[in-house]
Amino acid sequence: MAVAENFNSLLLNLKSGSLEVRLAENSLEIDAAQALRYKIFYEEMKAKASYKQTKLKRDIDNFDHYFDHILVFDNSLKGTLKDRVIGTYRLNRGTQKYKDNVFYTSNEYDISQLINFKGNILELGRSCVAKEYRTGTTMQLLWSFISQYVVKYEIDIMFGCASFPGIEPLIHQKSFNYLYKNYLAPKNIRPKALEQRYISMKKENTQMPSFRDFLSSIPPLIKGYIRLGAFVGDGAVIDHDFNTTDVCIVLPTKKIASRYKLHYDRK
Image (cartoon, rainbow, N blue to C red; front, side):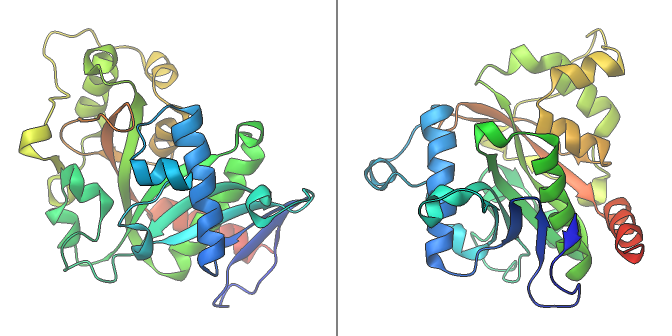
């Protein structure tokens, strides 16, 4: 894996074989990300699209303009820009964090502790990769890029909603209980589900699974966050539109940043 741009450059760029990761540079590239999101979230995962989303075949919302959009290209593919974008993630540094309705997560959680945090914060969301590219190589490339971004902008904490499939929380109760008892975020950075949407993750007298069984019971993205040192907020939230039950991930970046710096310094 080679760093294609100098680390101090305004543009971050990573390449591995035919795959390339960088930030979207214009509205057409953001449109390609929205097209991929629509294909995965609405066509594959059967989320409920609005009339406008269905008509445009794009996953669009009012938050996209606050985010930087990571794109993963397969440069070996022919066709339009949209055909070559095989992965995306969006990153919101909260440069306008004291204004209302900047963070998507605030639709589900009280994140005032994070907004008031004195360090730099970064919201992550809308992670998706085309089915045939859901491999370790693609995810490693994405996370290497996010690590670059974290170091470049001196991010202290990353956060965002992460999803369990379905809207029946009881199915995931053992996992939620394990997360609550072992990974609850410190109080000074702990989000809490909005009162009207709050679903308790804690359940007394529930048999605790082994760590191995716990890892096998949670979605791959959440498993990845946990392995990086993530915490969770207090409470789960049902997202009827996306047919998921969400938890709030809080990930201090100290380990990620130091790991990336070590990797970069060796090059």
